[in-house]
Length: 209
Image (cartoon, rainbow, N blue to C red; front, side, top):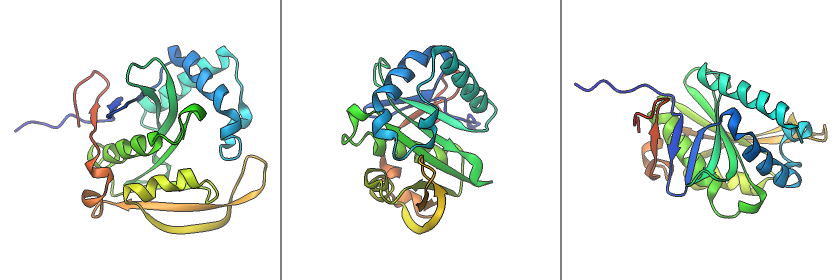
């Protein structure tokens, strides 16, 4: 009997993308993607208020993210093109929902929206969440006004469970609604996400998916 190789997935390969744990040496690529996308992200992403960062601040941030990844506290991935010469966005698997669940978040470089990249990345992370982490539920949260973001879970077979009114705060400090999209373990095999072509590798490059 072959013993399964445990996760997490440090590197995920899809048809067009590489999602991988970011390292401090990625700081210039991260800076380029964020600085080109600030106006695009400003209405939705609270963390954009902390941008732009200088190089040393960004290196420190990436070291922190890498540490959280290694410790299983949060799995933040850079979304890169196939050659890994450009960062096209960012995505994460956040375990803060509690045991048996992960939340997927994502953003895409302003120059690469409307290409289905967020859907491709979210599908890959959905597969990793269920097939590597073995969770029972995956959620995606978004502002109802962010129609591009809301289209992603809909395409992948997630269920719109609720819209919570005035439960979050937008980057301007105003209360905003939050849509909750969920995909459960029993529904996952028939979802569009389950059909996505994905390969995943552990910290030393062993294939786990």
